[in-house]
Image (cartoon, rainbow over all chains, first blue to last red; front, side, top):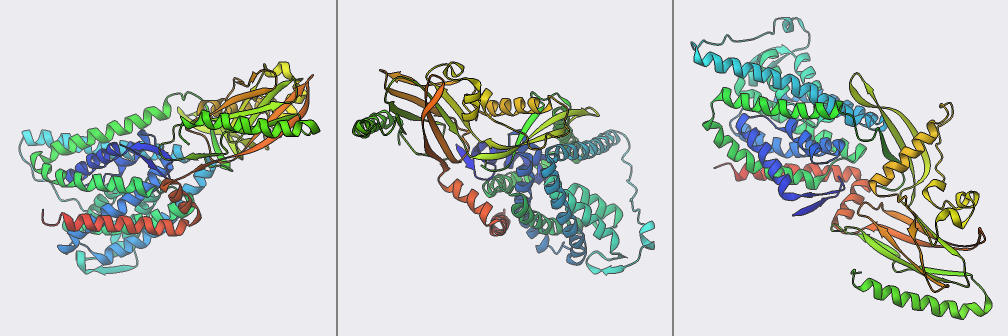
Length: 308
Length: 255
């Protein structure tokens, strides 16, 4: 069942895209991650131009965050005030990121930068997760030791602009959440990912937020920043394919339902080791593509005139 | 137009051309008359390439060449170089007036029809197509030729340029026809189909016919809307995603 994607300007098998959406949705339901960092490379693998993959992914994440944040909202697990401070940072990060994206597109380096950032991020995250989950698996065989709580916000107390965040029972400077948001916004704009895998640990370990409010608050922030990124990508780069985004959303929603049910069947460390393996495999494939000699060293890009 | 109806249409059109031509011939108005079976190629979502029949007549013996050009573009050719183990776009050269699509055909091997200078003036055959870089100053000699070759090679790989001269066949010594093959990747825009009649290495008559390649259907409308009303398109994209996300959130609330 082929459908024509109007912006990507290619025909794809709708079932394949739905299946990809469902597969990544399954993983995100299972592991509680957004899955953007898997979806963008997968889209690139099936032939979607990297800039369109990133722009469309931002659009898809708007929908995914809305459906996610609703659940947390109902349980009161969204710290709107802290989320808004992060959002202020991520708005600037997103706008700046889209400008960088446009500039790189003009210079002909965007494909490279997207692939490179994925290799670096996926490699780092995958390796960390893998080591952590293997350690946990080994520890499980030995004596069950209690994990010491990690809170490294010593240096943070010296920062100015202190604010009270009643939702998270925190009294901290606005600068760290603002900065975390800024980096998150850059990730959204350049890589087409929500950045949950960066935001969540940063909010727990740097801000010292309570775990229950972290996911909802980061989703709240991601929903807005991906909406800004979608708008800017559509206006400046014309790289948002609504049809592709909808297909991915449809698949993702269904996949996530099964994923969250299947989550009970796997032990936490096993699941994380599995996810780490997938992440590292995607990273490896992208890295191989970067270093292997291309068939033709020359490539074309039409600056203006007829659309290809 | 369906593929089956095309030969019939072509035959009818040939007859029409002949009728016009036989009336015109007493006055010796034109040495060459030609037309296409279609002047519009509509690319729908299930488009897999199409053939357009070109036919015509001359007022006597001679060789005929046909050149199909897509809309002019400015195209950057980029060259990758290995930097720290990674292949990076390092150099580039920009070419102006690059036809988005190019096809040439003749009734005889191109180089036998006319001297190179004439072929170059009319851009007949890929080797004679004028492709000049706009930023080749201060570049080492030979660079421009290398990038030009790469441009043609990539275009051939895309399927938008055809290297081997296509065929124009004569039926008798006055009627000719040719089949122009347009692949799936055919770029959209305004095309020109030039038909030239050669005698003793000189162009004695020429005719240019327009041909339009355009996308039709919902996909084309979405594409045009996204370009022309980018802000509205962006806002709609967000609204659709929010609605879909909200629906999903509500639908799976109880499950």
